Length: 300
Length: 300
Image 1 (tube, each protein chain N blue to C red):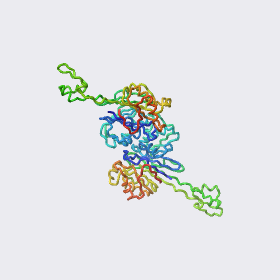
Image 2: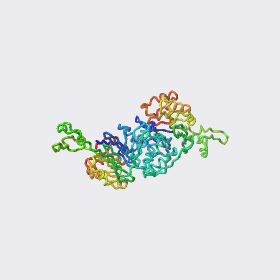
Image 3: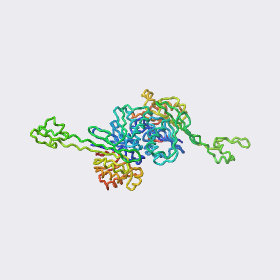
Image 4: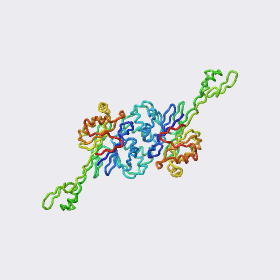
């Protein structure tokens, strides 16, 4: 299960009590942060998210509304005597921005801090349960999307059936991985009989700030939940293109082409004080669309 | 008249819904910002302070809770197409921190931006109505206090009296500056008779982050309103000294020695969830003490 809590859904300048981009992604094992606009640490306090539990932070690009809150968050983790390793993934120059400010404060990190610069598309992090990839989007400066994929859970042994069929314990590991059992009489006992179904793995795509860019749909094919920016309503498509942003309908088109199950819209321009129309417009193209509301947790 | 609105009264890590240091100082002519912790621009929105009206920003030192909100504020001013000159006064390295982040965003400033590095005690800004000086305090890194002094208002002409005494118009300017008039018969007509009293000039001292440091009292002698940090209660004096911070009673002692009229306490440690005791303790030494409450405007 992947759960994504929206901490900020506004673009550029904070307004209408909406905040700059930040999202928390949670699985049973991980709490990851995606982008970190100014005030993210305060938003985490407001929505009762423990900042000490974050071990991985992904920064899409170096426009301020996506990272100005990072240094404050790191500073607070340092002052709170965090000891656990922390991994940050972002454009190369982010490291010098962090370094200069931490050096000047004379605070330093009591924890190990690993900076991973984004260079090419592919896997950034992987363990037994999840993988995180980055992919290129199309913005005014270097900018990356992130794809989070849970790994297939091992199938569960059905104790009653393995006992009935007298399956040797040494074969259980093979059953976990979906193999059928062949007994001494050369009879095949199907894996589906011997094991119980498990939750299918989920996926989440964060498409950062981007103009309408069809290759994204290929990168996130079949994703369960996709967040796609929708800075403007459809009538401002020209403005969106000029500024390397997208409209509601363009976001929906990407979700549709990707065969996504659900679309979250965000990064709304400060020119809009209400957001219903974004959902209305996008739903004409892709029905299962939601506005990314701050403080709300969405499940992939 | 000088009015100071508190935007943040907490130290180091934001907590208990308190924010890092930032204060807005207003006179009839100016809106100045003193320190700019993370989220200052959001606090300005909350308390209906127009960020476009700020022309001078003073940063006391480079601990993050005093400046991490600056880059976000500047970025928003740029995105809002501010055109008016902006002056920032702060420790030298602040300029490179601003430059690196603005360069990377590719945004740049549409307004003229002047950085004034703090180097020695003395006048930073002066016009007909106000002067701003910086003075050294005693913190773990380079740190400055700021003293704001209104200039003496010119006395107002009492039209009835100047007509009675047949004072020539050419002498009015001298009357504004307090001179007596001597007529042809060599009679002295006192300025007090010919002019009306005006509001006496006010002063405000912001003492930044500092250990107990008696020279501050000399620097701010006779100030109307002094803000002095009070990170800890009196029982933690040793801890305060070690960390180059002050206690409630130390803040009150400085206000008393300075002959201040009123004391504001702030920069409270996150270890305190309520603040009444700070006022209680300080009042034993200096009666006219207030807790600097966020969103409240205090008059010098």
